Image (cartoon, rainbow over all chains, first blue to last red; front, side, top):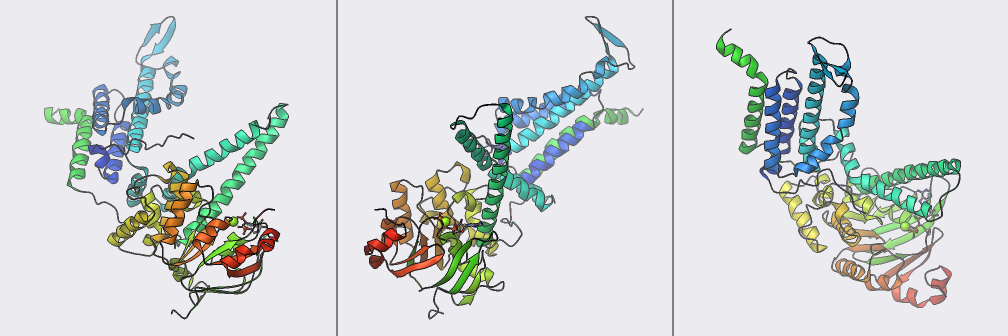
Length: 260
Length: 238
Ligand SMILES: Nc1ncnc2c1ncn2[C@@H]1O[C@H](COP(=O)(O)OP(=O)(O)OP(=O)(O)O)[C@@H](O)[C@H]1O
Ligand SMILES: [Mg+2]
């Protein structure tokens, strides 16, 4: 059965893939943070952030379509929350659109939330697709993320498809025995299937644990001492973060320089 | 140390928590360097027995591995010296990459980085999978997974290999490959299998189990020529 891995583009040779995972985590989280704290009407700054992200995307050689597709997944959630805000009463004037009244302040909220949410999702998509999953986990671990999260995520990454396959095999076995009839019967069968899947996963967990013990596991997943941050990483971090910070604080800076 | 037996088991009993009597008075010895086939029908207790060889399961009775009684003080040493390969490679390969899976044992042994790399490459080479380190186990064929599973214990350089059905579900070429690899390894071996031909190719001695008991323990030729006994324990069908 064919599956798709969240880091399927991480094997492409590109300057971004070659960066230290920690450096990438730092860069992307700094970008998201800067973007999220930017005042809603700093339109130029938002344009700048998206430009930076596009630049990284270009260099990383991850296909644009892939990132877009995964970013759009977030759209319904964002829009569900914000789409109605422009119709609510607010300050700052209003516009008429085919008999509907849109309020300027609400439109800015809609713009603000959408532009930041999509930036965040796109940045994380790019980060996860341009970094081998195990390196990402290693980077996060070195940055102090608790081990239990790392271990859980790593096992999920490894076994999600094993479980999905098991579910698919069960579904096939069910369908080939003419699964039909009243819906009440179906719910019962589905309940059994879920229970079986749970039991199988549990048993597999036990066997994996035995396999780990057999190879000297003593409660802590150790990893090889991993890549230190090198000159190239530092250059990338400073370059991108200072560019974004410039955009974020350009307003304050111009004020400062013009001395008002 | 060489006067010690590789394995000495006396009066071993094991009952699963649900009450199934899986091992009933097991007595066996395995010499250094010997390769032994562990045969028996489904449910005979073969997997249960081999899980005792490195202390994953602890039944009642006396077990010595390389002269060491299995207890919590010797567990680490025993698990280093006994390489257990599970039946389903998906249980054995739990890391994101093949390299990490093969390195898992050596890392737990506290070896240096260089030594770990050397061992991983050597282990992958001996199962004819050089250069597979970066691959994800999930993307491998079943036969490749089986061989990686063997590599994950070879990298610990064990003195004894214990393999639970190493050739099951493989095509003839895959089986041949595994047999060739195993025969090239000069360590003590315990191989669980249902395939008598393969047992003969791999081992000098055979232990036959049925219903949790040992029913035969002798030269493999003798065992294989005793057709009534093989039939009685479901190893050949009439
Ligand atoms: N986790 C468990 N809990 C309860 N009973 C178990 C468990 N695992 C195995 N058994 C039972 O113990 C007995 C021996 O099982 P075991 O798996 O050791 O057999 P086996 O010889 O390896 O069989 P196979 O050739 O099918 O792998 C069987 O009756 C089995 O049902
Ligand atoms: Mg078994």
